[in-house]
Image (cartoon, rainbow, N blue to C red; front, side):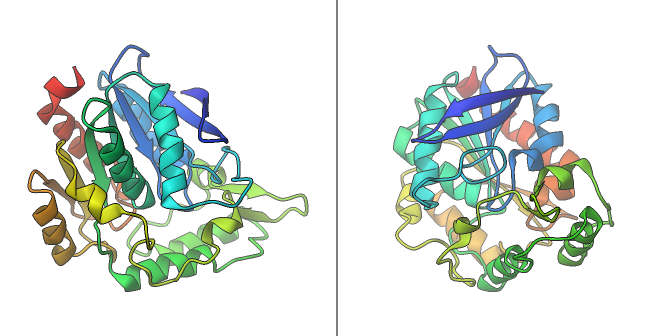
Length: 282
């Protein structure tokens, strides 16, 4: 895959890309605390589908700059993506997981169908289940001093994701950690990202997310992990009320990390969705 350096709103952002430069662009936005490498297999697979697939490291994550002012609001992430979109071929389809889905909805509503013609939300709705959000935050803050080995990090993930077969130390795990000068392995994101976050908070206050979702006129898809403790049937139906054009794909054996849990099923769902908007992306 190709590595890109893109300009955000006052920060430099890293990205990986697959597919031909002249093809329609699918821009992948990861969840909070993840990196672009969480999409690795999906980026390669979608890049073989006559699309230019670009996976972005959000500010403060992976190889992207940390926010100099510590601003990790949804609005700040969205401002970065608006800048990135201007540097890519038009129109684009946004695919966002969890936090990335919130960001994608804000960007799509702001830029309109001429610049964002499709949106895929990956296991994210307006009202997430508070207990699921709390479990994510607890995991992300559960090792503030990191791990003494990659194996210890792998054990922590296996405990957090018991529905998955144990994978041990994988390339994806290495990419989601960085080694400090003292030899300890810590998650590859700025700790300030979680500053002030309420553990059971369903969505960031003042984000304008509900208003943005109401304004969406483009085709929207939700890819939901059926084992998710974040998205339930009530959340899906509320979203469908606001977005009547919503198309829902269920991934049977997946939880909140649907793309990583079953990449083949996730890619199949996105490909099917892209097929329904073929005229939109050219």
